[in-house]
Length: 492
Image 1 (spheres, rainbow, N blue to C red):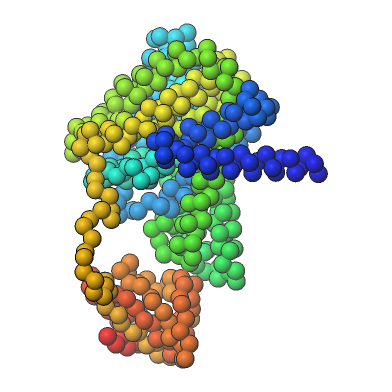
Image 2: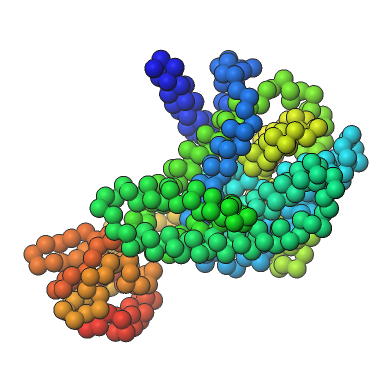
């Protein structure tokens, strides 16, 4: 019992330190992931904490679980309307851009260090993707507001490029452990992983929406447990089918986030908090795995590779991948700089360790050093670079406030919908009515009762639905009610 209590105390204390570190990071202008890693290193065997930890397999397991939840939360919070205009550019960056980065870094490492071509390409593959957790955290902080479609493009890239990096890393590990294997043999695998992962993610997202809406659980808290369960289920099932699990959970989250389902607002808040918990836990474990004394021998070569990655490989991959886009030179320059490396490369660096590849420990320490350098230099300077390139946008809410002291205008018109006995909406949940986005069911009048509605509220005979409708959605509401929900009466 004493050991269990000590473990609980130590774990909660480390998480508390991580939360406090996130508060400090915003004031110092340093990405939170750097402080999370620092807390883990200080708590490790070579720090004041003295916790002996050296388990790459556990690090990999924690990392995969955490990344799945982080990507799912990122997908939930991704607005399809904002992503659709930059879908082509995002896909180019997450596939061609990742491949070019891996190739250039592999060439540089092979040319300047005592690494074979395959070992160099392995290191290049590991650091080839930008990190979703790091990019989401930095771009959604108060200090970063970008013009146009830059923000959704960067978030789409970081959320969708991990599968390509995972594939390249596993492919290079296979080539190093099986010398007779050829690069061409990997092509069918990558096509299947990407196509099957995308299809599985889309179908899983649609199925999850139907399940959440139809299940009608008696306790609201169980909806959080349900979606908590769906993430590893989707990832595991996709992986068993040899599809890419990371892509599947990200797309499943995106499909759900752009659909109407029960308890949506509370579930979005729940998964946002869960994503932060996963980030803190993942970075703490990664920090525990690192021995600071092992980083000293790789400082020089780590700085050289980090500089090449940030100043040459990343910009070259961005400009080639976006050569056909209409983005300006300044926009491409900013995208080049927002190439944050984070937990994904460190987690991927555990694969060579577990495969017992010759230079695995050197690669792991180099990757860790590159991640720290990228997060410190790029993460902290993004607002400054955005201002320098004149790409900073005025944040929402910064417009001059009205000095009028009168009553505020209601942004729409209130309508009352009376439900008759033969109406098609009787017995259906509000979430299933298909009302447009500009419509809010304010309350339901049922006899002498006034009910505050939720997505799972079931419409009954005689209900009077009080709707707040904006002018844009009014025509759609009338068409919906006339075509599907008749007979009802709309009173203004």
